[in-house]
Image (cartoon, rainbow, N blue to C red; front, side, top):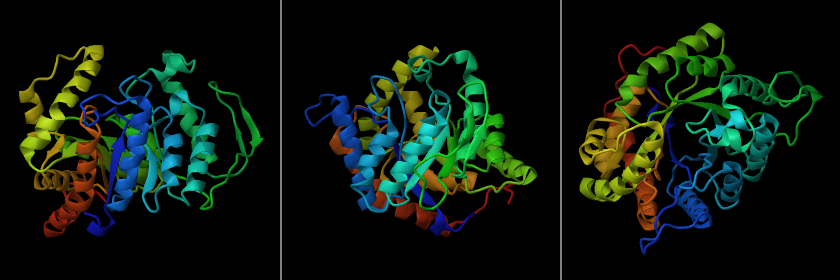
Length: 357
């Protein structure tokens, strides 16, 4: 287990549209402003990172994370600003670099990029890409992005965008490099690719016991050693919600979670989720829903299981929770859950069996 004081905690959002205090689902514009307000609160209560995901669906308001992060940058002082994820396959690596370098400037060096292929495919036809090129798009674009991070003139050629010949890209960052992660949902190939480029690994764990991802952490470390890159502390992100009691948290979170999950599940051939399944996932899986003590215990177990260096809670995963309840959840997470997790980890700093260094 790494030094407890070095473990970081973040919040993630896709700009899910919450309900206002009258019970009405807010507009996309209001949801974006709500995400900024929640990030400002997170900054004030000591949360380390806010990560905003990219989606192109009606239930999510954020399609341009960098733009929202730029707004947050000017209203915060210390919290780091990340995407979660940037769908690089359907974007241009040069423009992604430029946008995040701009956020980095506005925030005085607080920008992070989390690259991924995305769990939805709406962005591909929207931006003129063919899904048959799904693999090659990411392979080529992550290679180009890796080269751009050196912030020196780039010569590159591929099949999915125009070639670059001694091209210099601006603006430069003050530090000389953007902190870059890759979001991985459980593919060994993706883990090895992340290690190949020396990027940080963020595990997207949205269901089941977190322990099952331990082999991917070991794979990342072994691959980094064999490839001659440096394995960095891994991160994980999962849905969660904090309230005064376990019952209140579940009752507030479940209706919106079911609505979103069933809508997405219908597209993927999943049956509607039942309350019993939800309760079982809260009890044994990767839904961090409950009181401060319940959520803190679950997070500390997950961090130990994966020897993780960062835990991000997807706090807005039930989009129909009210704006007031969401703010309260962020406040409890920052002021009470995180300190309690640190206490629990300090009391039992057990390293999981078989972890490599």
